[in-house]
Length: 452
View 1: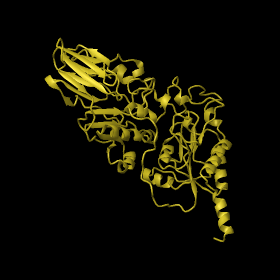
View 2: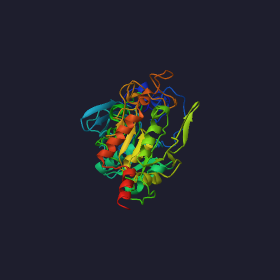
View 3: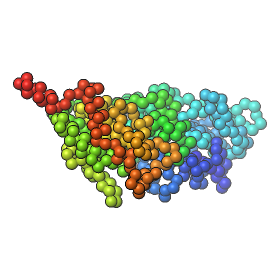
View 4: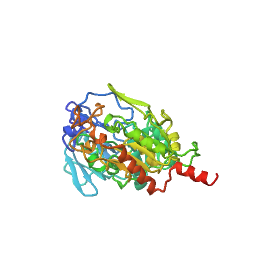
């Protein structure tokens, strides 16, 4: 996003910046279009630079005629030398003229940063034929797809769409993402280049780049549809202009089983209290039920205790403590041999999705459209719910106890307090029935009866 630089060069943009477009747009006084972060919150103070943000090159990377420079890094970028110009930015699919202006020099940038089949046309003012007439063509070009967060679930959710984009356009695609996930995906996607962040990107002068992210406060510049309407993962399909249907990313499977006994994996932690299962008895009831069936119950959370100020959440007492900052591949190897997984709307649940085991997903602050489909999605409609996906609510990343409608009242976090142990156990029973999973204790009885 850019605004006019009144000191040096003329900067034109397809729309005037508004509050909806985020802090970078509203406050920019730079001569360059500015990136916004994956999560824009204009009411909070500035935070340190995001190490997962890769900015566009200082100048457009493509050389045009008459000293004109252009590229498609975070939208259309055109840099004009002194002259008398007429510029049009068009959508080649529709022939809509998105923006037109008559600058004498400087920057012309598109407001919209997501994938559009742009066409750039530049005339010397008054002449009939353009001196630059270029339509976006990604085939064989260096393209960056930027994952500007280090979080587990978001990156997993978006991964398939980046792969789909590369295959559709036959471009040379570099994916920039956090090191743990780059290590997991790199061997599974030989058609893609992975750059682990923090670090230096491979492509110094990409032809185009696209930023993945969840863009808040009604942002219309980096996403064609508000992500709250289409789901956390499917929004990447819309940003990249590819088929938005979900598909679990590929991870390395086929490891040797390390735990002899049958077990279920659980993950009980998340980054804010609203994401937790805030029923004080739920996990204990579910674990007691699983252990009565003869299962080992293994908790694979990263941290055994999480919380803030006066509220701290420990892993369930009767679960086996397998917590720790383990390599993600170790988690994959543990998950793929579990009978099933029980978790929240959080990163380890998305990782379990990659292993293709059955999943019980417990969440009330999100609507079921937010995550991947599982028939064992636990949701209670009897109280307030779905604030994360409510376009009238803006998630506050700085408030651990965010509850936009009922904070500091007896109804706070009722979206998951009303989800009972009985309800989750009911989904477990259905899961086991659907997948013909017998209880370990029944296997033991059968083996004893047969004398094994």
